[in-house]
Image 1 (spheres, rainbow, N blue to C red):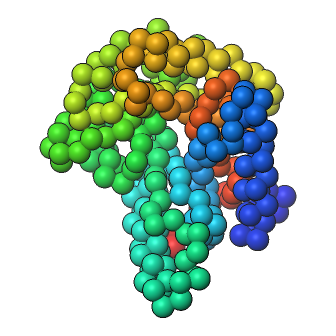
Image 2: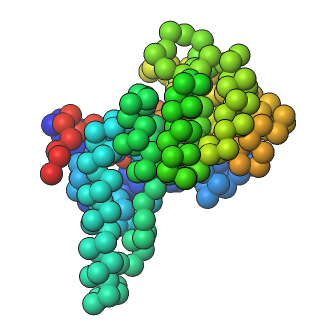
Image 3: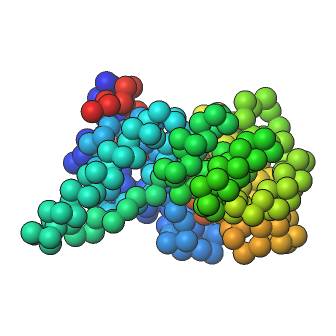
Length: 263
Ligand SMILES: *Cc1c(COP(=O)(O)O)cnc(C)c1O
């Protein structure tokens, strides 16, 4: 573990406060408030201790990109929260500010054969990138009599990215999804190309925001279409300036632990 990147539970609070302040400032630049932006804490490189500490601080939105870790961590954390609640009956102070439930976000590539494992655990799937995947999620929702919230992942950078729907194809897919009664189309997600310069991400974010605004103008998804998930540790301020209302933050919060412990 490289010490320079290590974030311990004691300074997790500082990292969290600092990111929230930066979110607030970026939101102000686009005439919004920090409270208009949801920070999804991406736990793929976080330790279970760090996740529990963050949740005890009152944070409720967590994101995972890997199915196996999600399947392991969601039940672990629910157990932890249930234990906290039991303790709180004896000593109410002990659960002050701890959320009753956390909201998991699936942010990574989702294979169709993993839908039944992932869907029951998450509040929002950010990474729907094909009609076939949307249909699979819809079939699961019908079978289990649920409504599942989803975003379309957009490949807006125009470069060779592994996942995401090409920009010109987004509105057609959104219209198709909008006819699936057990899916709730909530908006778009995108990832900027890797770069050392955060400004390089701006065109990708601006293009995705344009598509998002067009969908809203055309009333695709109706009022539920109100989520624009873009921006990560290196570029979240730019994403917010361009209209993001959900940012997905991993490294800036938890550091870059090389190997997550699975205890
Ligand atoms: C890992 C990941 C993030 C967070 O990345 P950081 O640079 O560590 O903040 C956000 N979104 C997705 C889809 C990811 O896979």
